Length: 441
Image (tube, rainbow, N blue to C red; front, side, top):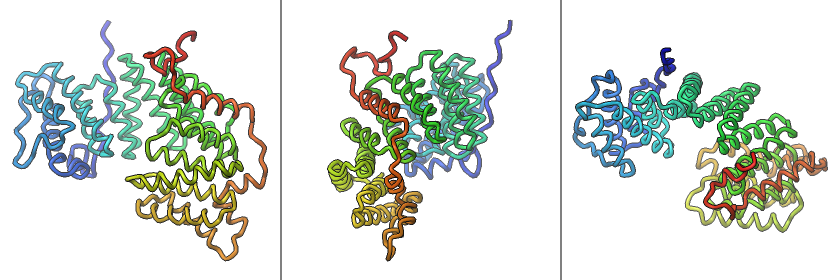
């Protein structure tokens, strides 16, 4: 019986207006000697992979005048290895695999720096060098989505699914399903997105991928909150906490999202404030620390926790004053303005919104800019109309309506479980926190 053929990869994804193999995007995104060196090397790698497997070799040429191969110190080892590999006179299968890995390393480095076109170019070189590696196919699909090449992203994610399934690389299979689901969600096809997230969840559970199981449940919880299905949202969120296990790095982001949904969509300010307050000992990196403090200020104000609001308000301003970057400041200031408005502290609400407006304008953060402008327009009117204020400060409407807690046992139980799960495990080390509940399942 003959071995089934591997699926055929889709066509190349354009990395610039000139087409997939126009590598000027590297010069635009990386710049300087590093951009020139990476472009020169990628041109050589592309010539190498374009040849039939049996006739590759001897492609790399010495760097052109003025091009320094060591211009990107973080990639020096990878660059030197790729230079040697594509210069070999008699490459073999191991050479192809090594070239693919080297290209993948450069692609990941570029993505971490926001150079998505560069990352996409190198990711495609990786899959061309070693087409049997589903990790590379998934990366191409994910980067294509970031470049808004949605049709190509869909094609590459489908290919990654098929390739991963054929080669039994179940981590990539689950990732590709989740990526495909997120693409469907981005296009507004919620039923399809839910279906693929459930398939990702099924695969993660079948093959014992606990973190991927948690991620799939996390995604399903968020989507249920977005469509107003609170019952299933709470259930999925609690299952995600169980799958991750206490101390897992994904618990704080999940807690933040749950707190925001409780506050924004349901007006459950006490539960949100409880979650944000409990997050503070576990979130220290900026700008996340700032955003947690600002969200706590907003939730505490609407919950009537004035002392907590005052401390969170001061902490947020202190964090902004000592930060070397303005990242996240505009969003935090909008949250602070919401909190001040809930306490009828209009001067402070106006002060926070005005500063948020300036920072958002400087950083070209359009969404936050519009929100801050609306706030100031409502606050600076000769007579602040209740209807206009409620339109830009929706917490006021929740407070006036005195909405009772939505399914309080479920919300309270979830908040408590999130808080407990944020605590770092002190038993069973060095077992991974992600496997905390592996026994007995």
